[in-house]
Length: 198
Image (tube, rainbow, N blue to C red; front, side):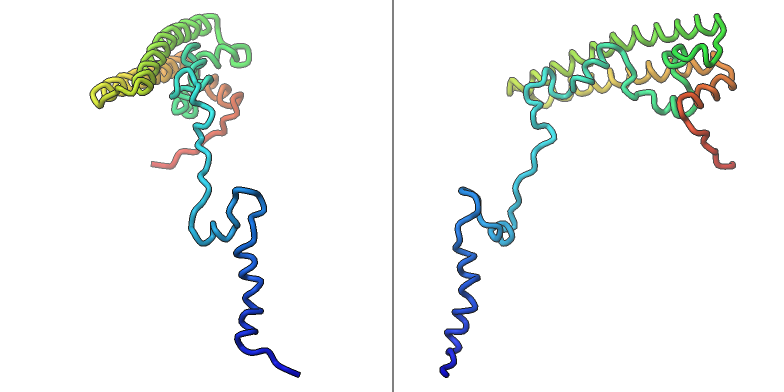
């Protein structure tokens, strides 16, 4: 019985590997899997911005626009809300459970009305500046000076809007009793937070 030569053995063992290298891909136009492994290339991930190119204002989602137009909080007052400084709108919504007096209700309504009016104005100004920034980029003519001016204005307006919301929480706390604040926190599902001893 004749034994195969070393060369014949090497060729026989290498044949399946060579066939895999030259085999056509499973789908036309797509390289075999080994190509990705050896080239170190990866398919690009889709951008989280995909589908937003047609937005009215690129930096603002539909939810952002709605909140700015309606003067809602957008989570801006979270440091107050979660540290026992209730917001006027939520307190008014719970006035029966919290047992607000007629005087407290009137005072909180005035706080809310002031906050809401200011927030709507500031929200409109933010939308206007964000639209201007978007248009500058869309035109392809924006420069560093214009960019710095618009972003600083937007930043100042956002700071003012947040201060309006936080100030309303500050005022609201002064109207309520400690018992009402504790009841509000309970109704809102905020667990008591233990403070470290000094």
